Image (tube, rainbow, N blue to C red):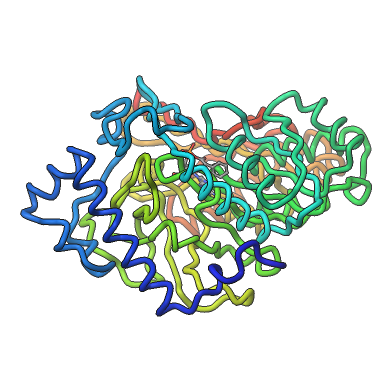
Length: 438
Ligand code: DLL
């Protein structure tokens, strides 16, 4: 696929590194001068900005965490006065106040460029129509994709999330070639088309750019088949910018996404010790912004688990690539001492054609022991063939056995009818209900 900024996306690595080092020094100087929180961090570690000369010096610095944003709510980590801000976004936390993030005009320019690179990698081209079903508002998804698509020269239908029937009508009437939404919402839309008897080849969509929540090959397959698209992964987070920190190339679709590392520098560290891990090892992704003006972030602890590689991808881009997120370190379920991520359960489903990638994981602790129930839909084809009786068949044991074999945990599998597991109504879907914390 043609790149949006080929010179930058294929910059030879020595040049890329020189650029990163230069930008890092500027970013460090900026936060030291303008953000008391960072200055304090430097002082406490007896560091001066001049101690950070290159990327190799980064591990000297402490991490910045979500709590630091909460503690300095709302504007404490901003490096510019309010008059220089062009936009605010916020992400809702599970408790209390949201985290607030800010952008200058220049930040919005970089945001649009990196999303434009992502959309081009996903198959987007000037003149193409994008049906943008990410939520518009404080969430970065809607406006983030919107700005990038316009920058690339696409035309955007700003549908936002929800109202599934209207979305389907608009797709049928306007004929967009590309859609952006959460993977769980793409599943919802695919089902709605099926219900109406619209075959995948009759749907105008060719490309889907999906992210904002973890997903696996099982869901990729169901969305690609259901909508007749090629689906790529888009990753990002508000604290660093929003969507478009990284994106897969549509011709690669191997689970590895290019990180636009001339703006966002990635490290992967040990979740327990925080020590940097070698390439290829799974740990927590830590990101440092290199060009942010309103809210620079040094060593932001994303909590997302992945690995990175700098091996060359087929597209010719030189930037590092990151693997699909396996989950967040705080989403990890500890089931009777065994660490389990919902995506691991989902991955097991891929090998079982009789079931659908629609499920809910319910964790309880009735007495002392944790109990896990996987409420899992039978595939429509299988259900149609065997009827309701299939729900009480030994298919549930087969699935439980596979999960035990692969993940080492015992789960009770309850088979449920197609269409009865929770669905995304437009935004991120929570597939885990953990009642132990209540
Ligand atoms: O979700 C930004 C975004 C919008 C990304 C649209 C992609 C598309 P937040 O609401 O701040 O920002 O949530 C960020 O969502 O730390 C991950 O845990 C998760 N996440 C985002 N993209 C992916 C992905 C947006 N592709 C948090 N795969 C991140 C897995 C993802 N998890």
